[in-house]
Amino acid sequence: MSEFKVKNSTLASKGHLQIEWASKRMPVLSKIKERFAKEKPLKGLTLGACLHVTKETAVLVDVLHAGGARVALCGSNPLSTQDDVAAALAEKGIHIFAWRGQTTEEYYWCMNQVIDYGPEITLDDGADLVSTIHNKRKEALPNIKGGTEETTTGLMRLKAMEKSGALKYAIIAVNDAYTKYLFDNRYGTGQSTIDGILRATNILLAGKNFVVCGYGWCGRGLAMRAHGMGANVIVTEVDPLRSLEAVMNGYRVMPMDQAAETGDIFVTTTGNINVIRSEHFRKMKDGAILANSGHFNVEIDIESLEKLTVSRRKIRTNLEEYSLKDGRKIYLLAEGRLVNLAAAEGHPSEVMDMSFANQALSVEYLAKKEKMLPKVYPVPKEIDKKVASLKLDSMGIEIDKLTEEQKEYLATWEMGTT
Image (cartoon, rainbow, N blue to C red; front, side, top):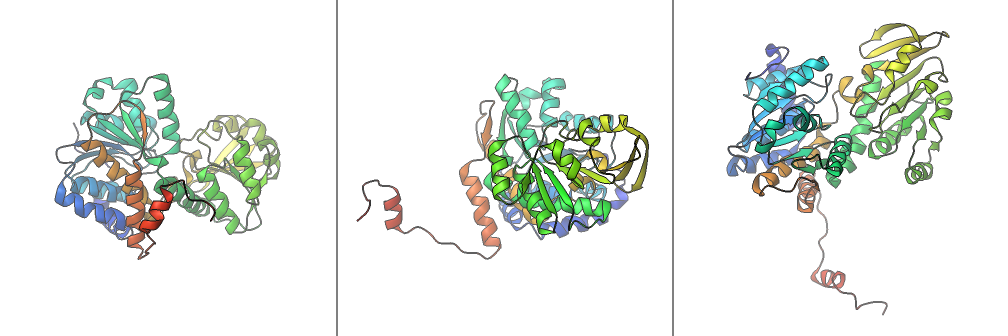
């Protein structure tokens, strides 16, 4: 087995500074690290992780390492790895296999290196690691006690595996913790997606028609941030409840066919395939900008866009121009991959503090439990509440506690109107 493979080991000193910067803004993980360093709850465990290799992920890896675990890590997207952070992790003794700009073959080579270490617990972001183990590396399954999943898209795949009977070990749905999706998905995705779009284009959002495809928690956060910067937000959805909520939040809601004619900027946040397709490209304005903030690069039908194209050229880093046969130009950001990670730095450290605290505590939970049935489980409520309490403490915020009288009242049914 290789010990590590990164793009440039000389970047390590810069990476250490980035990790230090993030660590100071992740006080919940810092508290967990202090306890882990004393108690060593993960001593002797091998963890296999497929996560976006960012400075925030490095802080999580430090926590797991402090808890006694051996960690093997690969990137969960070919364009999301921060090479300086990867170099720093390699210098810290982490078995890391990640660099920015991987081919598909290199991406899966790195994943197989992680699997070669024989993980007992997996940490995944998009479920590629879990699906690869189940499909191509089944010999690794008997050694695995459980795993965690970070994203909405990954959980969609894992729940489909559970439903079909294909899932062979327990997964804790970190994404579904309140202290994850209400903050990471909403505030993190909202801010970092806008950040990626602006870094790639430097356009003015005010006055633009900004189409958000999908109104889950990521879409909600993105719509809120785009509106706050003066954009005219349009939402496309397939769910009537979410559509109604978007209307009540003050956004225009319409089918994609109609939005295609109106939008200046389009961002997909659905986790589904071919959300923006050939019939939509044909209706778009000259100069329309396309970006994706869903996990995989399947939400924009790039193959269909290429068939309509007579020429392509790279205008800026992460900005490619497609010249169509009728003379219109459409601009695609970050190859249709996660724009917030490919064109920016991903979510702010402060919000990843809670998401990765859930990861660390869920790994500890799995380590202490007997092997669980192969199902997708919620994050235990006590972990969710603990993360919220630690975050409030770190912000210097105190909250009320129920009095004994109030507890008694809530526990009974006899008292009514007096």
